[in-house]
Length: 240
Image 1 (cartoon, rainbow, N blue to C red):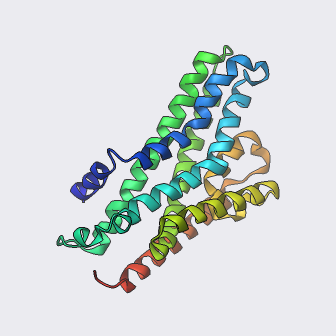
Image 2: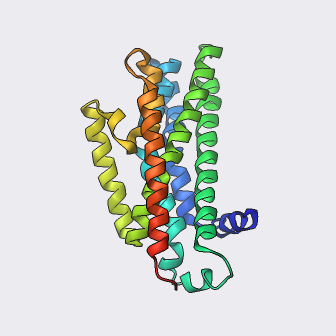
Image 3: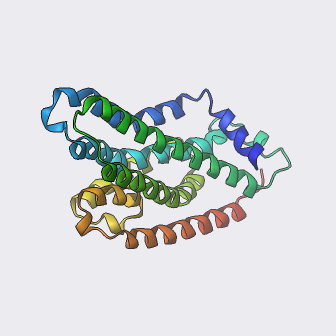
């Protein structure tokens, strides 16, 4: 399995798509570092971090990870090399798991990179001290957010594997963006799986009004349903 995952990562080394996904995922913390010195109102840790986190995890992050999943799972179909992939003596489940783990690794790296840029840059541009409580609360929120992001990936993969089309994946990303905005505006984030990664981040700002347990339960249900659907889809897929 390690060799399969390593092989998937090697395929992505020179991918401009992956580079683009990483760049849009860290765009807002980088932007925050650039504009904060010129914005006196933004030179407060809560305002500085909150702006970048809201935009990334509420909207851009999930869209970026949909495109990431799409690129990894349907790349062979786009390049017409899918027959080569299945020519090796590997089961469909092994290939599926290796691609899923690759997505998880990249998501984890993006979360770490986002956190490092946000707080590393903040130490340079914000002159007020960073408290231990603020730092640790955000670190734990990132971990929970990442786990909840993991929970929705199988469901996204299921949709992508059915469509097997890059344009359709972009359409899913656009619909996700619109639906996330609607759920955010109507305060229904807790009931929408694609907003799950944002809930721990939102709790940092309005902790009294948000309970994480419903989000965690929804995450568990979502990952179970997503994995079962993927297994069903793989079992019905014709051999190539």
